Length: 221
Image (cartoon, rainbow, N blue to C red; front, side):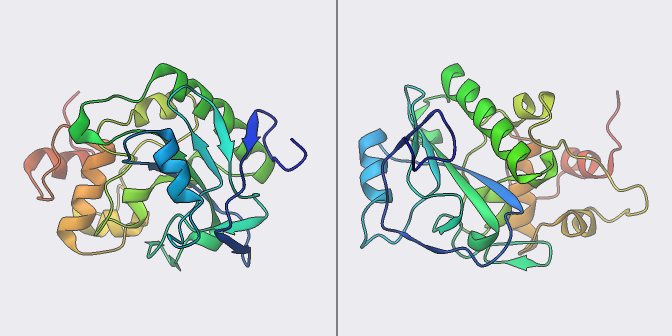
């Protein structure tokens, strides 16, 4: 227990970490996309895999801490948001156990409740805002789609634990608005990333009329 940063966590250390070289500026949410908790934890602790996270929320709601927050975990990989590239040193990574969207398995109410408590604690201790909570698909849109279209971002937004999309009144180009917001990458990739989070029933990577209206704030009430 002495090793954990969050009092509700269980310590199960991973060798996959290094010294933190930048202040904590983001919390990145992931889906494990693995069959079960143990498979995910084994991979996150496998030195040859070179991946890890700070926390993993299991299917039953247990929180496992694998890396101390003062250390850099290897969860973001090749990534960017705004002017920052390679977000590992800048972030805390939270994996949420889920076999992936193709499985049809939803994130559970228990997992959301635990995540909400963990985020509340992390944001308060690190003086972070809801806008600094991102998904893996936000920061690596060319290669990642987690935590997935089936993740309920609106639930976090309602609790001020993530930021809803807010249009930029002075920007009338949807792609320019996405890049101003922080998205980096090819047009189709950042459109898909936006849709995964803000239009999860219309994930196409294309600038359809609904996506354009959502980005620019032209939706009808």
